[in-house]
Structure formats: structure tokens, C-alpha cells
Length: 443
Image 1: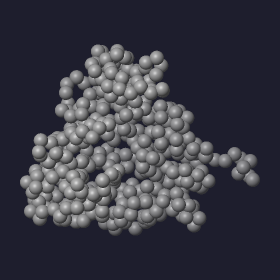
Image 2 (image 1 turned 60 degrees about the vertical axis):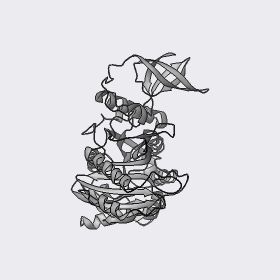
Image 3 (image 1 turned 180 degrees about the horizontal axis):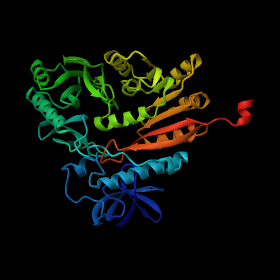
Image 4 (image 1 turned 45 degrees about the horizontal axis):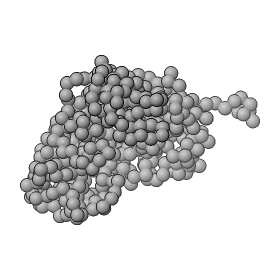
């Protein structure tokens, strides 16, 4: 079937129309014509697979870049020129903001490009598998359980892949196999920033050989080697039990925006560290000097601590106890005394604080699911004058802004390309509390 494609979907797939029904097809860009095969036909949409490109977009890069391009599925925009990627990402953000929140695109600024479009990822979380009898790490083909071994990823830093492959080689020599029947290596979680590395081995019920542990810990720059047992048959999580330190420290220390940050293996930290540094700097720059600043979903405290000169008191909240432990350690490590952290639900803790004292500004970096209803309701009735909202999901951002605009004005939205060659886009939104009508103020 021949089809013309006009738009780009939120997952980076091309969208064409068949009798007004949208057809989603990976591997096709807007402006291209392709021969496709319908794989799923539903009442309101259809899915297709690419058979042959008949007309190519001028935005397509013809030279092959990655040997795993058509199997991994991790970088659907890899063959799209960089300026076109930024334009489409901004368009996807604007469409989501209007669809879910009726936020007009005049407040959306130009996308800040990543300093590097390739080899920018400083961490990976890869499942282990077996290919032709050899232990490997990789990905699963989209929508399948077919394992794809990835030797070198064009998005990883070369140093990260080099250390990853060293670990896999040592593991195979030690007789460690891919996870099966509650034993073996299940995931390899690796972080490598500025020459320092942290390795987490997610395994079944295994005692790892001492020689293997010694080899891994002897890799230049390796600061931390930990093991977590996850032998659940069906699970959506990577880590299982609390990490056990096998060698080195329980954390890795990295530098960002003049701060030293300790990260445990389980703690979230942006994979594009260089671009994350720029985004955090911008978010902090948007904070006006104030008395009390609160950061919800604060993680290891990178932004709270970077903003320590912006407020007399800063309080960070996160529901993950390990992140709060890291954040408290980071405050001490950097000798910052006006920032404190507490573990708990963001909305619940904010409500407790508001009973005792006013909060001037809220800094928030929620997960992809966005702010919870309780958090939104609390903000609408609070006296918080300014919100700096860091988002990694345009859809949930649009939904949240659609609620918050009842009491706040959206001043600006600044997009950041955190993950080049993917459709993902992050952004900073600045909101200011709308003054009540004069009659209401007098009352």
C-alpha cells in the first residue's frame, strides 16, 4: 500500500492518513511517501510497517549511522537532520500544550540544542542476554522479546561502552551467564562521568566470584561496584534488594555547576549530564530572591543546592529515601547549611509546611506522570507566588498547566533537547500567581 506521511507522532513514528484514519508507521518522516503494510487495523487508527521508501524527505540523512537502527528502536529520529529534529520537537511540545491545556504557542521559546548530538549519554541500564553462546548486553526489539546485543551505542560515550564491554568479558570468563531460572546476570547498570565509573550488577540469587569482582573494581576509574538481587519472574523494576557494596564506595561523586554530588546506584541522574547542567542553571536563574523556596521531587538535591543563594531557607522533598539520603549527604559535602531535605509525598509534605510558614517559590521536577491531583489542588489554594516547573513529558505538562492556569499565568516555556535522535523533549515552565480581582482583595 502506498501512503503519504504528513506528521510526526509522539513516539517518533510517521503519521499518514487512509480515508481520514491515521496510520502510524515507524521509520518514516513527514513529507515522505512509502510503501507500507498494515499490521493492526483499529476503528480509529491503524499501525503499519515500512516496506520501502518511495520519496525521501530532504531532512533525511541517507548515510547509515548505526548498525542497530532498524532493530533497537531507541533512536527513531537518528536519520533526521538536527535542525529538523529541533523543529519537530518544538511542534510536538506545542501540540501537546494546546491539546491538553489550551496553552498557546506564543509562550514557547526556541529549543536549546544539546551540546552533543551523539555520544552524549553517560549512563546505561541494559538487560543481559545470550547471543551465539556469548554473554551480551543490549535491548529488546520494540514490541517483542527478541534480544538485540549492542556492542557500541552511538549515543553512549565511548568510555562508557568500553567499560561495559570489559565487564561483560570478565563476567563471561568467570562463567556468569544471562539471567535464567532465578540465577545469572539480569541487568548491567553503569554510570561513567568524567572518568569515574559506578557499576551495579543486577543478578539472581548468585554469589559473584571474588576474582570477577576484583577485575571489575580494578578497571581504571571504577569507584563503586554493587550488587542487587532481583529474581522476580515478572517485574517492571530493574533493582531488587538494597544494593550490597562489593568493592569501593556505595556511591560515585560527580561535579555539576560547582557542586560535588554523591550518587548511589539506584538514584536518578540525568543521562545527558552536560545538557542537564545547562537546564538546571536556567531553572535556578528563573528563581527570584525569596525567603522560602521549596523543591518538590528534588532527587539528589542538584537544583536545591545550586539555588542555595536564592533563598534564606530551601526545603527539598522526595518520596525516594535513597535520593534523600544522597541529598542530605550532598548538602554536608558542599557545606551548605540553609538547605534541608525530607522524605515523603510531595503534596502531603507541602501541605504540612504551608500550615507552619508561607512558601514563596516552588521548584518542581516531577516524573513523567506529572504532578498528582492533590499537588495541583494544594498549589491552587496556596500563597506560592512563583512556580518553576521542569517537565520531561509534554502531555502531562499540558494537563497540569491546564489546571494551574486557573490561578497562575504561564509566563514562558523553555524547551531543552535532552535526548537527541529521540522524540523526547524537556522544558522549563515559569508560572506566576495571578492577582485576585480588586473587589476580592478588598473583601
